[in-house]
Image (cartoon, rainbow, N blue to C red):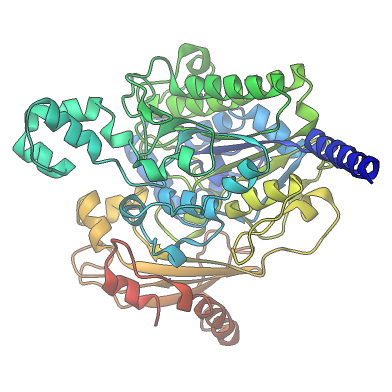
Length: 545
């Protein structure tokens, strides 16, 4: 009996060792505000006639580059990622769960659509944050993966204790919030900033308490490329960051990966770059900048920062290949939402789609999504089934031989990617939240400042199913937009986003039965929509009617 038990233990141990040896390493790369049309693998057949007309008009008025020059630079900025897409798989009908960064990232982390968490704006996330135990990285960590989050976090509340520590240092016993600090003690404002307040996260929402072994990053919408004081390492402020953050984040990822490879432990790394969010100054280092010279600072700068991401991903691939890990490393790449499209964020933007970040037009929610895994994904190239960036973690979890939690909205794409299944994993996708001009070229049509417009902008919802998108825009208040200075009633529109990707022709009156069917699909979701953490409840109420 003892011999049989011992033998069974040896067999079980051997099986676990074999499973661990076969588990893929997992690398999830996300960039910030990258447009579908910016991506080399999407724009090979794109023409300037497909660029958003108003975006082109704004560029002609305010910038020193032509659409043709922008398209040319976009076609050489991402050779590494383009190669991964074509040798792996890339989805041309992939979407973010929100048109804004924090709700989108929360959805990726939890596999649940933002409205179910009461999240409709960035402020809802910054005021609420991720709930304990909900990050899907827990599944990988608990199964023995070494886990790291590097770069942008932005799914938690800032840590007010940072401000209190600065006040206490000066013998001040008041409890003050950020805005109050600036008014009552402006001399301490910069000190609190340099102490890392704006990149901080409360301990319970720190990555180390949400499924990760290591954290190097910032809990904010953006970070400076150089000399940032927003970055934290694990639970400690990292001080003033030296170097160019695209390279620094890559260095940290390589250090973590190297340690796990030496220890023969599978790794899961979230590498979420700051690029190409707004605040793109100063320019990228000359080793990138010199390859993208043009008549326009903004154009050269945007694509040099983007190329820096691409070249640094190549550094990781080189390391994985050198250490024999590339064949069995599953890589995913996406953007958190559509491009801002305007100013520092240049053409082609989200072409051939219209709109931008903050809107429920295709340009705000359509994103690049690619996977590469030589051992597990045969070269597939373009894939047309409906997909979401929320699907990345369930795909990773299944690839690791595990099961994702039930009752989430995200689905594993592994069957499609491996060629074992041709069945789409989503019948439709749904969005709800703020629908605003504030985050792109359309803000020039606003009669208000950016922050005021965000507070006054209408709500909206959208549902994509098959070739069609149904979009609801809530009541527009007077004095918000130049196109409707007296305001406008709520409206519903239907578009064929395959034949009409720019959403120029409303088909609502021509296809009333489809409108009703898609409305019914949307309203299946609304009973689960939680009240907003911070957003206007009246605007939210319009999304439920």
